[in-house]
Length: 495
Ligand SMILES: *[C@@H]1O[C@H](CO)[C@@H](O)[C@H](O)[C@H]1NC(C)=O
Ligand SMILES: *[C@@H]1O[C@H](CO)[C@@H](O)[C@H](O)[C@H]1NC(C)=O
Ligand SMILES: *[C@@H]1O[C@H](CO)[C@@H](O)[C@H](O)[C@H]1NC(C)=O
Ligand SMILES: *[C@@H]1O[C@H](CO)[C@@H](O)[C@H](O)[C@H]1NC(C)=O
Ligand SMILES: *[C@@H]1O[C@H](CO)[C@@H](O)[C@H](O)[C@H]1NC(C)=O
Ligand SMILES: *[C@@H]1O[C@H](CO)[C@@H](O)[C@H](O)[C@H]1NC(C)=O
Ligand SMILES: *[C@@H]1O[C@H](CO)[C@@H](O)[C@H](O)[C@H]1NC(C)=O
Ligand SMILES: *[C@@H]1O[C@H](CO)[C@@H](O)[C@H](O)[C@H]1NC(C)=O
Ligand SMILES: *[C@@H]1O[C@H](CO)[C@@H](O)[C@H](O)[C@H]1NC(C)=O
Ligand SMILES: *[C@@H]1O[C@H](CO)[C@@H](O)[C@H](O)[C@H]1NC(C)=O
Ligand SMILES: *[C@@H]1O[C@H](CO)[C@@H](O)[C@H](O)[C@H]1NC(C)=O
Image (tube, rainbow, N blue to C red; front, side, top):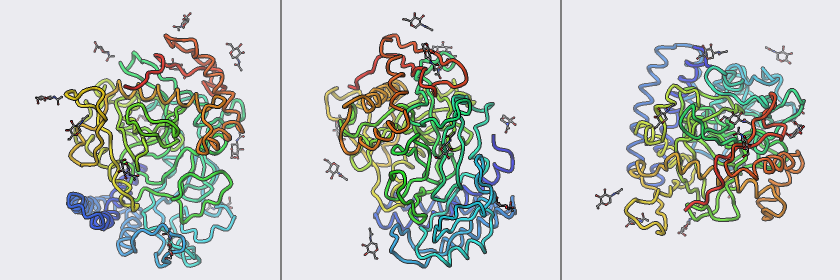
């Protein structure tokens, strides 16, 4: 999917981000007084600076120069401020993504929304002068996080040679990545309507003989190598992809001030990341495995294949395993998955087959990624030890050395998906959940017709204990709400 041009730019951005964030990681580590973190941060700084030199020497392109300039600026920038009334001294960073968003309509900065985003430090055609001018007019601080925008390579359709692509709808981007109005909707062109990324794209969890494992559809929010925190907007009709704010997801129509848009401060995402359609991590009842309620969102996945996947891409993946992450005592499962067309399919059948360095890297990223945003490390609930009694309380850990035992295998991951699919059905069924956190989710699904689509799904699969499901006819796939999410077995309750 990525041409040589995309690839070298993505690499340059990744190197720059690592270099840029290294000093901040050190600062964060000092704040939290964690010696191990300090050591790793120092190593990362050294490694990424070496990589920077390599990239600069090898590429010597304008992109690389912009990257170096941005890194130099940012090294001197003040610490992360996510406070709109805070200090105002930070220089805006020169944009790195020279071509802006595509896949949608806007291809240059003059097409940016006119709606008066004061303090707009982003432009899409790499003009540092323009960025500085915009910054001069700013009244607020943009957090000094290097922004790795999904560029033209990553807001287009996934390459169908590299990915098994869902055909029921196609991502269409509106606005410019990094500006508050950016959103990606999944549009069913045949029917001329937007389809809900959350409720209408079928989960279709099946035992797939082609790969000897469970496969399902997933929806991509954050392409590997970028750090714009794009999320499925569960409170908006059609649940589009849009950038989160530091306050979390906001109801539709609420202001999304530029300076509070969220980026991964820890650096670029190490994997393609996103949500699992037709699943819900219930906020009103404890998770069957961790014993703690979940974060009210669709299940999250980490796709560890070799190619970046565009924002809003819907691709089929093999389930390999899972991490039971706890974020401030809320369960937030991270499923580990692999594109069904990745070269490793068949070789990696379970997360245990994934090289240890890769597993450790993923564990460490999700353990620490919020530290650079001023939060605590996350914890993980560990799979029950074979030597402990089955009814013992599961143990949670936040120790870096527990990475090896933290991953659940593919079978548990499939059980988690089935359980969360059942919770999603309950959410959308009458009286299923009437807490204040559920209400806006249900309201959005009612507004956009997703509830009707979900009801059709439920009816179609309710009888099947064998769960063979039906195959969607025509190109609309499950989007018409008449196909089924085939679940290979009845909902399993987690032990
Ligand atoms: C899609 O990927 C294949 C295999 O990597 C490549 O040969 C092809 O050129 C790509 N197509 C596009 C349109 O990028
Ligand atoms: C934001 O900054 C102002 C001024 O420094 C301070 O009074 C306020 O408590 C801060 N708010 C938050 C949420 O940090
Ligand atoms: C940018 O977009 C505007 C409005 O669509 C158009 O008039 C202008 O020619 C474009 N500029 C460039 C450099 O593409
Ligand atoms: C999808 O939603 C966007 C944003 O609201 C809207 O501009 C667009 O017209 C919608 N597409 C269709 C086909 O309704
Ligand atoms: C699936 O697994 C079985 C048993 O482990 C093995 O015999 C078979 O070759 C595998 N098939 C594929 C396609 O990997
Ligand atoms: C999480 O739960 C533990 C045990 O109940 C408690 O000690 C801790 O304070 C909680 N942490 C947060 C952030 O609420
Ligand atoms: C269970 O305990 C035995 C004896 O302490 C130990 O040798 C074995 O490795 C343990 N098994 C696991 C899965 O931890
Ligand atoms: C939890 O951890 C403690 C200390 O490491 C250990 O003694 C205990 O057996 C563990 N319990 C389970 C259920 O794994
Ligand atoms: C699905 O299940 C139904 C009823 O059990 C059966 O008649 C049908 O042949 C099955 N379809 C497939 C494709 O297995
Ligand atoms: C569900 O997945 C199977 C293959 O695992 C496929 O044949 C079927 O078309 C899929 N159905 C939908 C609605 O995507
Ligand atoms: C939905 O499926 C039913 C039964 O298979 C069929 O009669 C109906 O025409 C389908 N509706 C649409 C919109 O495809």
